[in-house]
Amino acid sequence: MTEAVAGDIKLIVFQLMNKEYAIPVNQVRAIEKIEHITRVPGTERFIKGVFNLRGVITPIIDLRSRFGLQEVEYSDSTRVIIAGLNDLEVGFIVDLANDVIDIPVDSIEPPPEVVGVTEAEYINGVAKIGNRLLILIDLEKILNTEERLRLLGNEG
Image 1 (cartoon, rainbow, N blue to C red):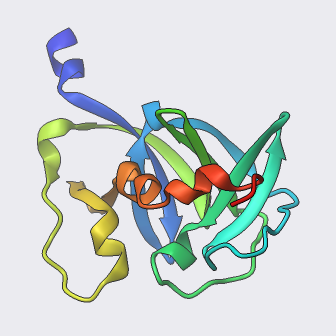
Image 2: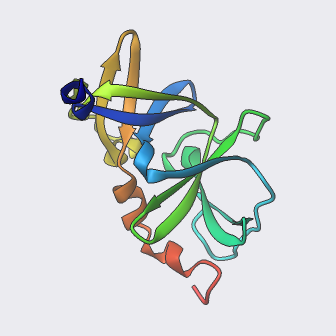
């Protein structure tokens, strides 16, 4: 029934340190294996640089580093989620991009109040689906706080 579908949201699920995070499918342009990243001097530590994705120079952010989590070496399961918001396109390095699911919008709860956790300011909400807890990421907060990403590759 269309009424039930209208109450659902389609999410891409990815992992960081064995926690599951999610972002809406409509914000994701592609999911890629990690390629050669060109470092850009003078940028924040979590900005790993840029890479050329089909002719488009895309800034790359390591979400582990962005959230203040321990960084690890990239593996065969490491992925770059290319996400877009308005006219800004950015790649996010994640441990694993493992699922696309539909969840009921009413299963999303506000983020818990957590003091002193860097990632908390980027959380849109949480959804409990069966025995899984999905942490919904607010791309707008991650991207808008980094307007200087637009300058990468220019005279930033």
